[in-house]
Image (tube, rainbow, N blue to C red):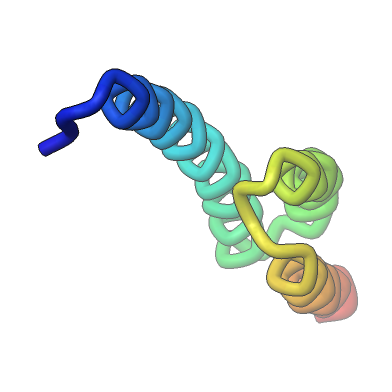
Length: 89
């Protein structure tokens, strides 16, 4: 348990930041789930639009420090190839 005033303030700041980051991560997951569902349904156009909506959301998570740059880059790359495969199939 925090004893000093500065430690108590740090605890409050961490709790506030954690809540914000949790909301941001949840938002990103929602966008990713929409892309996944569109891919599984086999609808190429829906998959493309969902992917176009998810891409900037992932980039925003990187700029806010919620996710690592390489992680997001990998996710975008893999999703992109899967969306292209839906269009070809």
